[in-house]
Amino acid sequence: MRKTIYLHIALLFGVFGFSQKITTSIDSSQIKIGSQFLLTIKTSVNAKDKVVFPEGKFFGALEVLESFPIDTVKNNAHYELIKKYGLTQFDSGRYAIPKLLVKINQKAFRTDSLSVLVNNVKVDTTKQQMYDIKNIIATEEKPSSEWWKWLVLLGLIIASGFAAYFIIKKIQKREDLAEEFFASPIEKAIAYLQNLDKKQLLQKGEVKEYYSEMTDIARTYIEESVKVPAMESTSSELIAALKKAISEKKMFINRDELEQFKGVLENADLVKFAKSKPLQFEIEKDKGIIDKFLIIIDKALPRSEAEAEVLFAEEVRKKELKQQKLKRTVIAVGIAASLFVLAVSLFLYTIGFDYLKENYLGYSTAELLEKEWVSSEYGEPAIIIETPKVLYRNNDEKIQNNLPENVKSTNRFMSGSIVDDFSIVLITTAFKDTTRLDLEVALENDLKELERFGAKNIIVKTADFENAKGLSGKKSSGTFTAFNSKTEEEQKMSYEIVVFAQPGGAQEIFLIYKEDDTHAKQVTEKIQNSIELRKAKQ
Image (cartoon, rainbow, N blue to C red):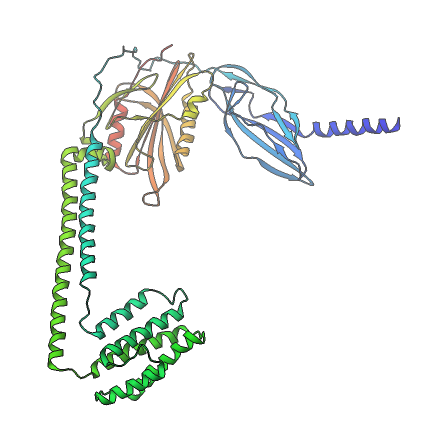
């Protein structure tokens, strides 16, 4: 009996403790249509408790505009977690925030149910210029563009040019290999020593292979020029044979230079057979001694007049081959360059420079004023607007699939990006009923949209708007900074946002351009004065 009483008391305190863990509140009990209010959920937990707050795009009939990050406040040994949501509704009436599920350590808890009153907005249509919706006019289908064929042709011509260049270079390389020769043994030895460094054997740690090739090059030269059996001889035998040949041929070679060469051969033997590992500066010193010693031998060798004539003839032949090689290279480069220029000229002639500017290069704002503008009708309820180029549709599937209950459709059209010389974004929204959007709320949401585009440090100035045709609305203008990935710098931009509302629909226009661009301001004014609205279809 006593155990049962203790158990009931424990359960009672447990339930009481948990009932104090969650509180729910809102910052306003009534709002205007489309205005945002804050729902706050607070939990008091320990440091090890795991809390999962509710998520979703709708809480009952209320739309979740924004889910804010969780704030944490430490209170002695406990922590207070605060989660806020921005909610709204685009239809008037009283709406209930349902009991939301919050999980604490996998246990389910429910928040309190609260209600909010959404007030209607007074409608004033006396200043709004409206037009009846016109019938659909059939137009001739525009033939598909053939530009891609010319682009393929351009690619083929350029590829042909480069192919010709590489084919000629390959033929030239084969001829060079077939006709490779050296005017003298010393020329061959120097070429092989230079090629040895290009192999980067030392960088790979192959010191033994480096010394083997270096001494073999020196031995081969001595055998070919001095006529001693250098390749089959040991280091000591080679030095002895070399001394004998120097004496017989009456070659003038300093004893110290011969001793240095002997030292390199001994170092090579230690590396190859005793696994010696000389330091980097020692290797470079040995290489320098080899280079210098071979040149000394070559200069000391006695030569007859016939041998001198042969060497001179070989030098002349080599110069002629170099000239022929240069000529072939110039021809190959010329063919490739000519074909490239021909391809670009043909592309510009057939497609046109205007096409390239329209689709790839872009126009300056001064050119936008001069080019022929396009008047088109966009979205629902339709907005008629004149722009330098046709806007293209850019709808977000996630937004389209999660429209609020009273929204019939929303469409987005645009041209350019936030850091271009000039860009336009046009958004139309059609409601299922006669809801009229609060223009101030719409401008606030549009500024958030501007932030999502990448705008920072936004300066805002709000005023009433009326164009040359008497059409009235609300306008926000100012400046912001945005990162330009092309220049990798922050760029200062100006913007103007104009919003219009009517029963059953709304239209929003973003005009963005570089700060202090006078031509862009003229483009903006011309666009705004061209605006006309269609009545929303009920």
